[in-house]
Length: 354
Image (cartoon, rainbow, N blue to C red; front, side):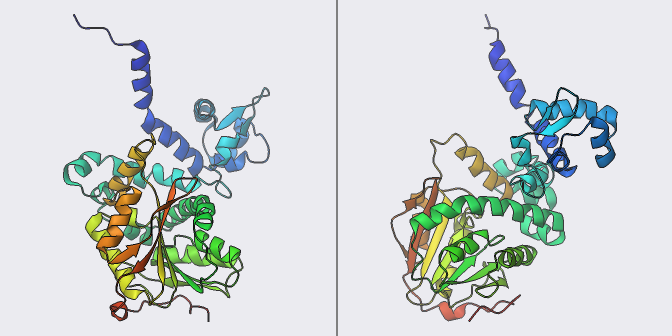
């Protein structure tokens, strides 16, 4: 005789299956900038309708759903106010605004191709959209802006770990490869005023990096260079940074990138590989790893696995160092610097500071 299902388990699974609805509820809040509207004062439903174009009848059904998620709160007088959680979705200061936009659009479609990804190991993002994230961002300013905003949040969280794990006192020129919006590099330069910086990013992201450098007042000490680090890396630095880049790639491509970096590095320079360490004891680790597979056909790795990749690429890596947030930093020197002249020059958006 079949045992009837546990009602609590049924309810739990039914809730999990609503994940798609929750994603779109949050994405719509970000798209209509509802947390922005409610940032200063509570508004009546009619006021929210006037500013978003959403009919009152629809808002009367939508806003209670956002309240159920803890994004807004309905006051006794019927007005709505954004909560501390909802403030994270603000377009001006919210750290997860860009991620919400991507989760509800490009990422959402990519996850619909999960079966293809599991069967082939190929990027589900590419299968869905016909091109990779970087290529799509080049033609979609909103996507590039959302991704840059997400990278700023991630880099800001990692900065304290990087500064705690490595002493940049001897750094003369820090070259940040795949710098995102340059938040990490600017944070390093702010702590070490004698160091100069060079942020290297692809065209769609380089403008965001340049904007961050200007905002930080570091124009005289930091340049932004446009280029694809899979093909060429600038020489001349004595510290090279690769943060959250290698996990975007499967092993063979990751080793190729690392070799390109090694060939460009002058004698005596160091590479700092910074990645979130995969920890099977972390309940979110498997989902983060699968996300890399879906988006890029990449993977998260353990510190030992990153260490092994560096050795395969011709580096002599130090023992991995772990930060309080789970970031892993490995400092590595090149076994051979004889190939560094093979790196091809890349076009500049600005000359590196002298």
